[in-house]
Image (tube, rainbow, N blue to C red; front, side):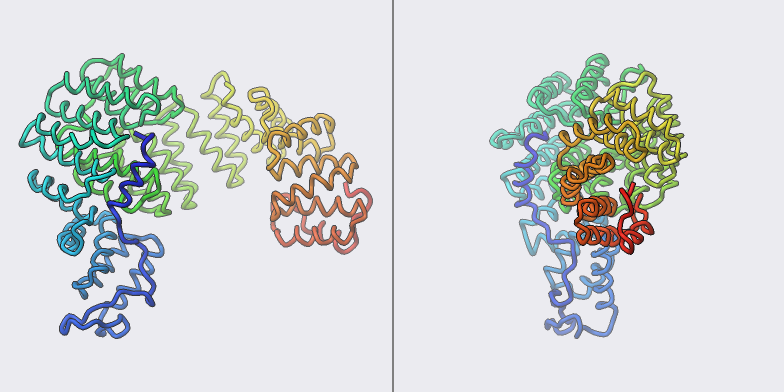
Length: 581
């Protein structure tokens, strides 16, 4: 499905337009209406009640991306001015995106009355009908959606699922026919035909459609498709076929924890899983989830949020939708809500591993470092053969300059690796950094050399090792060869260019050093140490005024790792003594 995402998302964006969820400034605020006279008044002239305060609080909450709070305040403001259609649309959209579906559903009829083409309001009404088992109502609501582009696909897919319960599979297949006229969505058509046949018990029809969906998407298969088809094979006793499907998907380079979990389950010989889609309501949830996934890939977050919230409402415990919700919220920096979404994933779910990794990442973004570490430790305990959580734990501990703890995490990760392969070079590289920062150079050097043995000419490793040798004034010829090659491989990396310039300085090739160091400053103009290096080189070639400019620039970017500010101040007062080494 991914190969058509951009075209389909563009089509849908025009059909499911939402008002901005950012509240307008007071100067641009929509007018309120006096509830007794109906006359328009600006907020500042509104009756002396809580309306203005609620509006201002809503502004603050919206600016902070706290949509739940913004929605609560907007509900209060909208109740004071029910005739304001702009305010109505904004309140509805904010409630729906925040997951306050009862409030969104209460407002949806008025939104549709004001704008009959409001796709999100129509979807909210359709889901409400589905929850009540009113499939005719679902069909009536979705019939008003746009008929072209991805909105047309959404309309046809939901209509087909709404047809299945009371009219049967043949009628549902007929409802899918509009999809045949839309290019690029054959995978969706075949997949949902397969799911409807599966739900109806027509396994032969389901198998044919599942295999067509696989064939059409052979060049770029989606995660969800692999899970749905693999689930069908597992439930029908075709474990070997399911295993091959999962292995082929992982061989494509995705390496997703959820597919790895499915593969482990299939290989374990345990009881067959439950269907991922077991009813018309769950089929409708699947449609909303898949369309939301396409929109989220294109960063069309507002309608994606609404649809993923509707999918979760139709299918409680929909862990794939919880993951998608968390990912969207994380991208919007709504981290507290993202944490709640990831925590809602069941511990025995295929998504539990991925949810744990994402949860640890958000904890770290929230500066809850110990909770992030604890989460990685829990994951490491749950999967004693997997090195990834310990590697990631080591990375955050290293970033926090907790180098001894980082080295220990990398040690434990490497114990799980066994015989290192080429792709394990970062484990040695990062452990080497942790050792070097503790002053354990012999161990660090050994790790850097091992990383280069696994991944020869890796520019980051060559740079770190050669720069360390430069500072120690050892192995300078070998360091020069390494850095020359690293610059060839990464000519736009200012840190690597600086390392070569500083090595030339150490070798007293001051003119050569100036050229590289000037280039390094161009690439990393705000890096204190690089500016300091260039100042030293300028001094040595007699450009003393320019040297002082660079030293002053270095201090302006302080504090910085590895910058001796007192030494720079001494150079500004007295110049550089001797060769400065």
